Length: 167
Image (tube, rainbow, N blue to C red; front, side):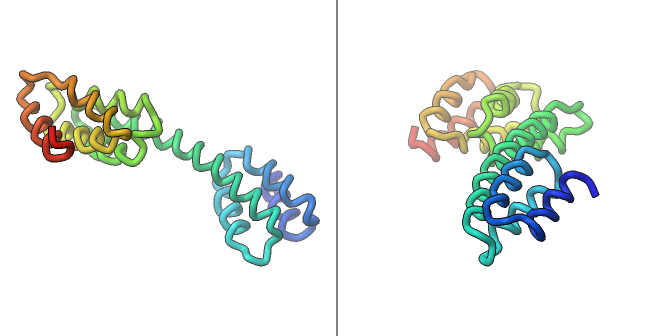
């Protein structure tokens, strides 16, 4: 039985009410695939002591941040492929819309793909849709206002901007 298994076992079978929050806190700093299901089970267990459920909720916030950062890094990686992987790039840019407000690096990559004239139109369209998810709206408009007038894709950008923001 490894350390994580021991701590989960201790939590479930031996720990007192006062020890449970410490065990959850200790586990929350460990990156292991078993932690998330454990935290969710503690939080959802109505019979569990409240202090443990509260600590599980707090630990989930930290875990979500870690997962969000890892997701953003993976999406950035998914956009940096050879032309042979254009489908991967296209879908990574589309998925980036869920995270674009969480990572300036991801936003920079998506914006660069939108502005790159050698990017295929489907990827550029996904990048445009992702940029339209940027909040606040003023930040989105700042990005789109910088789009080159002479770019053939510019008409799509201007039309979508007009439809979305009335400009």
